[in-house]
Length: 495
Image (cartoon, rainbow, N blue to C red; front, side, top):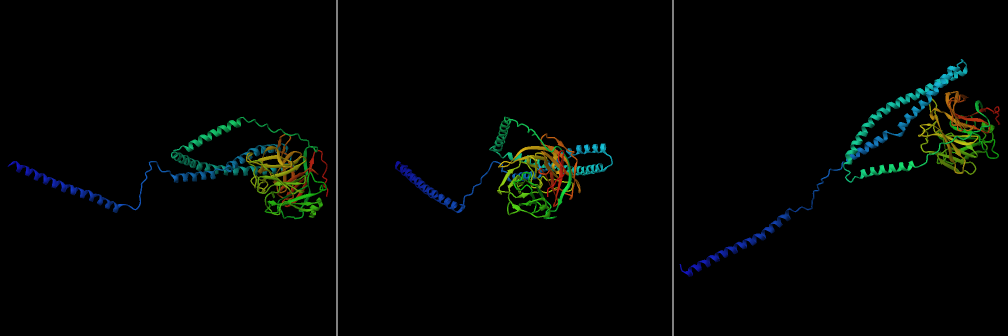
C-alpha cells in the first residue's frame, strides 16, 4: 500500500473513533441529566409530611411510681406513729408508779389503826376504790401494750420498705442534691449544739416563804349552804362564789356562772346582792355579758372560773389561753399558756366512771390572789400550778410541778399557798387526799379529809379567803363547806 493510502486509512480510523467518542459523550450527558431528575422525582414522591426524630436516653428512666409509693408509705407511717400513742402508755405507767406505793402505805396504816369503827370501814372503802382504779389502769396498760406490739411489727416492716425505696431513689440524684442537704443539716445541728452549749444554765426555782395566819388546814364541816338557786336542775356545770378582793360596795355580792350551752360554754356572769338573794333566786343587779354570742372568741369554756378584784378569770373559748374580763371596763386581757398544755377536753379531771369535760384549766383563788392549775405533755399528765400575776397585761409567774396524775383527781383548790386535790370515794363522799405546799415544795398524798356530798359529782371547787368557805357546784346544786384551820373560828355565814 502506498503512503497516501496508509494516511487515508489512519484518518478514517480517527474519524470513526471521534464519532464513537462523541456519541458516548452525548449518551453520558443525557444519562447525567436523567438520573438527578429521576432521583428528584423519587424523593418528591417518598418525602413524609413531617420530620420525626427518635431520642435515645442512655440513663435509666426515673421511677415516678416508686416515688409515689414511698410517699404513700411515709404518710401511712406518720399517721400510725403519733406522740399520743407513746404518751398514753407513759401516762399509765406513771400513774401506776405513783398509785402502788400510796396503796401500800394506806394498807399498812389501816392494819396498824384498825379498830372496827366507822373510820376503819371508810378507810377500807377508800382502799377498795384505789384497787379498782389501779385495776383499770392495768387493764388499759395491757391493752396499750398489745396494740403497740402489733403497731411496732407493722411499722418495722414499713420502715424497712421505706429505707430500701429511698436507697433506690438516691441513685437517681446525679447532682447530689440530697447528699448536700444532709451535710448542711448535720452542720446546722452541730452549730446549734455549739451555741446552746454556751448558754448559762438556769437556776432552779426557789420556794417562796409562806405565812398563813390561820395556821394549818385541819378539817371541813358542812354542807353549810345547799341550794338549787334560781335554776334548780337546769345547768349541770357551773361555778359560784365571792370575790376575795371586791370593789367598794360589792363586799356582800355573790357571783354565778352557768354553762348554758352544751354544758361547756357561757358568755355572761350573774350577780346576787346577798347570799339570801342567791338562795331564793333574786338576781340583782343581774347579768354582765361578755359577748352576745355563745360561744365565740374570748367567751367562757369550762366551769372552772373565778372572780378576783372585779375581774373574771377563765379558759378562753377554743384556744390555749387564759382570759381576764374586767367587769367595769368590759376589757378582755388574754395570756397564752405554756406550750404543750392540754386543752379542749384533753386534760380533764376524772373519777372512776367518767371524766368531766372541758375541765383542762382550773382557776383558783386564795389569800395571795389567782392561780391556774393545768397539765402538760412534758409533765406526762401530772398537775402543774402557776401563779397568775395581776399586771395590766396579765402573765403567768412562778410555776410548780407536782407528781400527782391529773386524771386521778376530781378537783383542786388553793388555800394559804397550798394546793389541795380531791378524789371520788362514793356517790356521797369525796376525799381531799393530796396537798402541795408552794413554800416548801413538799407533797402529801395522805391528807385524809372527807367531804359529805349532796350529789355524786363535784364539778367546781374553790376556796373563798373572805370567809374561809369552800364553794362547790354539784350537778346544778350550789354547796358550801366551812374550812377549819388551826386558828379559825366556828362557821359564820352572813345571809
